[in-house]
Image 1 (cartoon, each protein chain N blue to C red):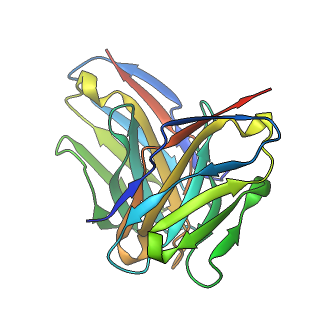
Image 2: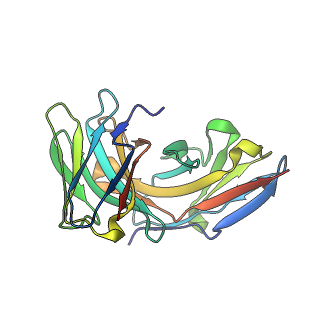
Length: 112
Length: 114
């Protein structure tokens, strides 16, 4: 158990819908990262937050957005969902000034 | 551009045999390198990391990796594989605290035969 908690673990939704994935980082970790894992693209970095502020942005679609709240938990919002958005979405966290990141178990999203 | 290449998509090793998983990277500065393992239906678990210093690093579960700057490689090794090592292994490079997120390879699936 890495200490990173993600909910929900599984989610099935229809095309065009919007979902929110939630992440609680390890206690005390200020940085949160979101990754998408799919069969064709592998593990893709989406976005990083540090203490509530966006720190780095990767291959995140405009239909996707994220935020980190004052209590340091983070949410990834996925809207206008398409079949191709079906993937495993990972949240990860790291301590202040640490380059070691710890992953949660992921949220499986299936778009039908 | 930063990138990670894991040349082997799938490897099968007999239980008790040695293992080496290859990883080559492209990175503009001194790389921070990582190996993660993902068991079916599980998240990514950190096996080991290299930031600086001794180029041979030890990790959990009996794994080690060697950083070779001249070859831009960071290969993962284990002297004797156990059936429980069957999983997918990912090599990654980056410096998250500097704003350079981890870039992952495509992964190598390890199967262990009895």
